[in-house]
Length: 319
Image 1 (cartoon, rainbow, N blue to C red):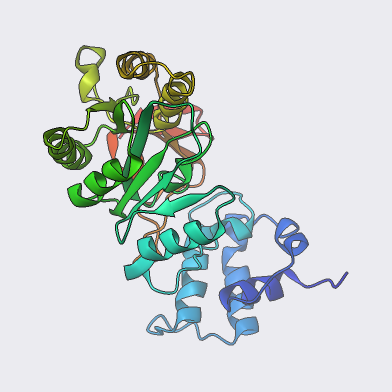
Image 2 (cartoon, rainbow, N blue to C red):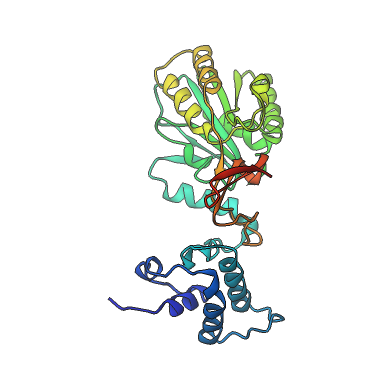
């Protein structure tokens, strides 16, 4: 197996060249007193000037690498290389995901016309169908939650944005449910508004529709205001429970009742180890020192309150 130096691996990463996984795993941890030494060596090896006025991609990458190393005490140097994506154009990301999913899915899902919704007709024992959805950027939710024992359909919005009512309504109609359709989604204002509009339109067309707004995030509201809590990781558990009842062929009312019961008993608390990167800028959406955890973190970089845990000082602090 070809061996490469740590510095060469770092340069390759900055140049978007493939680096053997063994090289990444064997990269050393960097102490603060060695930052300048590594920075100078990296600049020399990569042919990058240390002039801070430089604006090329590699120059920015080298300086960002140094800044990241300086902010930590001891972490592998590869930990600080930024997140990467394989999208060619961020402005058509949702369309690209839809086309890729329908072309490669191991289950037979079909797109609803030109809308951002997909349906699966394989859950044949169900009289009540389940439709989930929400903003894109949380993959594999929500489009990936469609299939056997899961949702019968899903509708995707743009990045961190609720699906539009027209696509939701078109997907409801495409399901052709015998007993009705349950809309199951996270409790966010945009989603509640758009799914609510679509539900009203469907009801006017004679389709029985009900909504389950998942509200599992205990940090976003007190128990007395449980219905105001956000939906985060609990979406999957509520969906699985509701789908299991639907698979038994239970009535619409019973599927809705037990789905709401599962929702009422589901609790989550978000903890962040690091930030997601913006699809537009490629940069982390918040900064978090490597020795810290962020508590009460939700989807789309939303938080109920700021609390940090320091692994060095072993305590939580309210931010």
